[in-house]
Image (cartoon, rainbow, N blue to C red; front, side, top):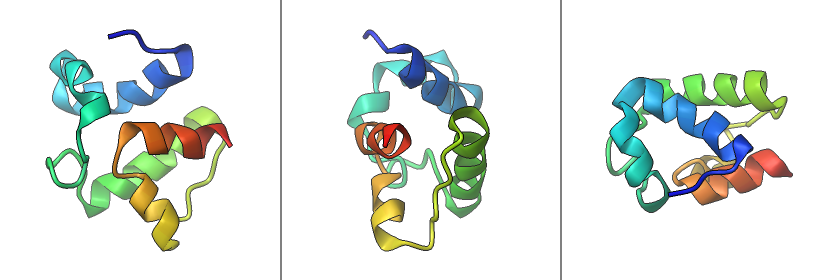
Length: 80
């Protein structure tokens, strides 16, 4: 599966936690339902996104929170 440069930067967050195998399914999972993210991980992810992409994610907003559940919607948030 091919990833763009920015997608690989985001994917690295998950690879560091789950290993290289996560790349095969990263685009097809709900991060929360599958256990890739819990409440502390969401905060860590938000800090990672701010550091790597300069984009602040306000997880107190329901829409932002929901959009962190999968790879595509998270990339859309980052690229706005």
